[in-house]
Image (tube, rainbow, N blue to C red; front, side):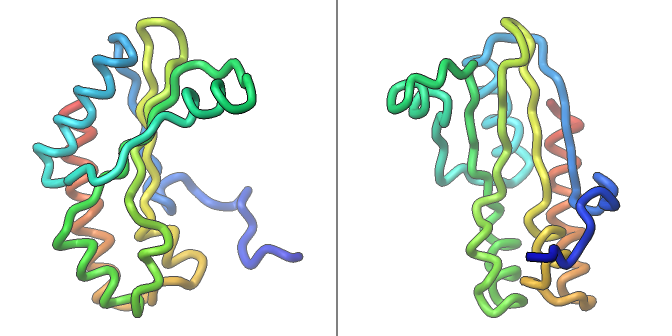
Length: 146
C-alpha cells in the first residue's frame, strides 16, 4: 500500500502537534491536565490507562500512560456536520500523559481536525478551516495554562 502522503514531510504544525512537560507526579498531572482542558472548554467523556491494561493483560511492564478523551461539544457537532459524520471515527480528541521519569510527565496532543483534512476525511474548505482554527485556539489556551 502506498501512503497518500509522505509522513516524513509532515511538519508538526500541520497536525497541530503540541507537547509540554510537567514536573509533578503522574496522578497529579492527570488531574491538572483534566482541569486545564475543562477550563478551556473541553469535556472529558472518556479516559483510560493503556499502561494499566497492557501491564495486566500482557505483562508489558509499561510506565504510567494515560489518555484523556477531550471534546468541545460545539466544535465536535460542527465537525460532524462538516464531514458527513466521518470525523467521529477519530473522536474524542485525545490528550495523552506519559511518565518520562518519576516526577516528570509529558503531555501530548495532535489535532484530529487537521489530521482529518490531511487524510481526506474532512473537506478542505472555509467551514473546516474555521473549525480547525476554533479548536486550535482552545487547545492553545489549554497548553498555555498547563
